[in-house]
Image 1 (spheres, rainbow, N blue to C red):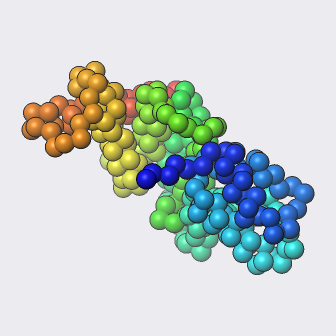
Image 2: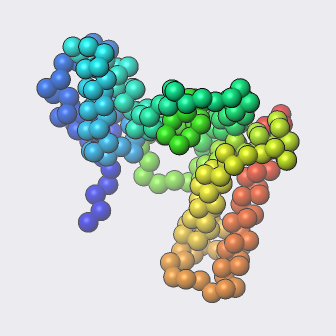
Image 3: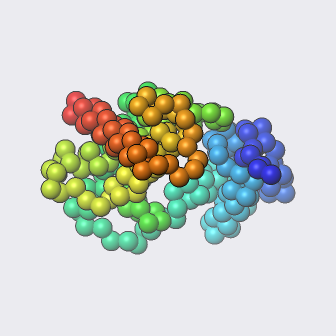
Length: 235
């Protein structure tokens, strides 16, 4: 049995359950937190409240504040800040341009999710990141939205190439390219979003001929996204 993630009303009810015995400051809007946590499941929301409560205890606060809950959400979405990590000025500059590429593409591409936060503070295994959140709960995703995701994935790599030159692009885009490639495969093989392959959902291992056609369509989608983003960032 697959249990879907709660919708905004469900998230609000779960948050109210976990927050009912905790004093809240006047700036806490549980409904707004529920709207701002699409895709969170019950465990995520419990973790959010727990992280916020720990931060409040560390700060000596007797009430949970909106900023503490926002800190908890960012930690779940983006990972733990690594404030003590040393980065050279060159690394900071490269990371800033890389993340700016993602942000500019997200801001200027129809169908892309709104930007939640952009940072060059190292978090988790990343030196920086741009996080996006949908405006509403998603029940289905259009081809336009998936193409927008491809474009956003390409934003960092293209920005590096335009600013520093093709020979100076870094491995920083590795995970972006992996995400984009998996997404393109999903579009072609599972969602019927390739004119050349047609409206099919390929679950079994395809023939070598079909696999070659799928691979060609995946590369085509990725190259087209790269070209669109290059045109956008050159403006």
